[in-house]
Length: 443
Image (cartoon, rainbow, N blue to C red; front, side, top):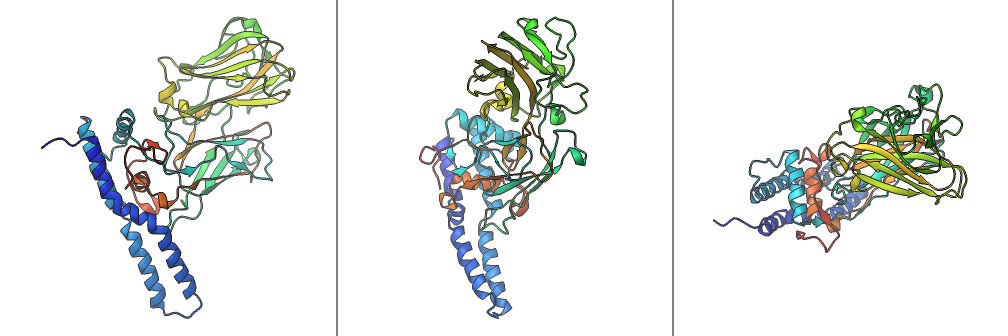
């Protein structure tokens, strides 16, 4: 018997899930019709059997979209793709296997159709917020494919514990709430999720493997050599780097005297190897963010600050903000944030500068893994004014209509874990392309 080709295996998957995908596409019409009937029956003294009949009808239709049935087809497809790639022993229920399958498809330039959701890059701050920080979102995976797993809903982030209630200064604690959960498989909007104890990032953050030594440069300098800044090494002229106690971004908890770095005009670099703190990433598929606050002597100052995270770097033109306020720079929210993309033999964090005019001050360096919630990676940081209890952000994922219920959407249903959808396949994104550009045909 001839070994099937990748195209033949993909075609079998498409045919197998077509019935379920067609049902998913029709689900919004079913929901509208049944809901209208239920509402019409309310207050009309209908017999209990009428209301029960409508509920039974909806339950039967929901049962027709069977995640277990769908998962069986995805498992069979995965096993065939593993065999074709000479990985016959990898179980499709093993998360490592799905990461391997992602790589197999990526290297072969094979893609499913994107769900076509809209994921804003930032959250919207509440109008009564006291804190002036930001909520940012990473919505692509380590190869740059758009993440397919977030629920279509509005999530609300609310500050639950601030400094006045026992949190460390700047390390506010948040709760994230999704919308009401879908009551069955006919209604996809709403996760019903609640995620507690989500910390805002700050310079002294050391949870989940993150944090650098002396990240905000608050330790007094010792001596005049390249290692005079505790935990850091200066490449260039050590005299260009001095400590500053007046121009600081914000004070850190437990620090007697807050300091920043004062940088003279010139070209130098200050770095810290991750081995100093024995930092080890959670996994190669975890994204890490690097952020810095800086201030210029005059609005017209020019120059460049380059942030280095392992093997990756990004330059920032400091002439862009024509002010003398504290400004925040951070790495772009793209695939380069993932550990597997910036890892090197001896990774380190560097801040490099080339200032052509006056003094610049650095403060508030942050380096930590991002937070994973419901299919997306999040980065919440405070600003110059701390968050207070009841400060909020909202973030809405929209689109992804069921009329476009392609095979990738079917995988999302198969992958959903917990809640009304039951345990599913490991939550791993598959390579996707815009509608019409995918190589694996829709059902």
